[in-house]
Image (tube, rainbow, N blue to C red; front, side, top):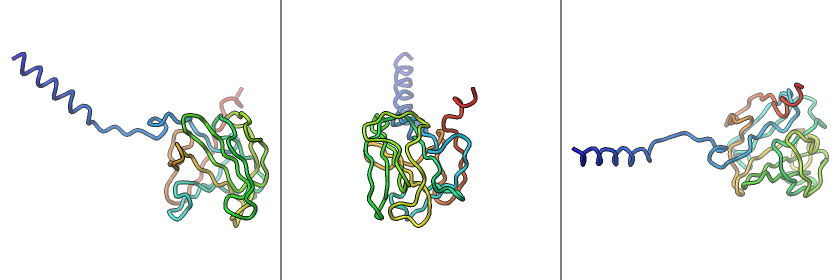
Length: 178
């Protein structure tokens, strides 16, 4: 009887290793809790497209959005800033959040940070623009892990793929309620 119990427990333990648990990218890669790259309370239309490059990035826009403040979606260090003129991303900022995580902000009208600067979530990094290969004012936003584009999450919720949705920023809202 003792041998049967032992075998049964071994089988249960073996099969428990194969249980299926859904884990978000944040949990599996220890990502920061990324927020929308806009100040608290603002609503922006997010658009994702199958033909977008890269595919899992999101474009965020709203009526009269040109020049609106863009903020860091999580704390980190400015990894790279650049200006590709009328090509590709135009004016852009890359932020390193540690553990292989990086965010990218493109088509800015201006950049408010310097390479190597440490920044906090919600801190201004630039303004919405239409620089680079852009036909209208918007922010192109990406989340990457170890150089690989990942689905975008705002406030631990995955954005809608593929189409358009409105999103309301909760970036630094709790600190503003004091």
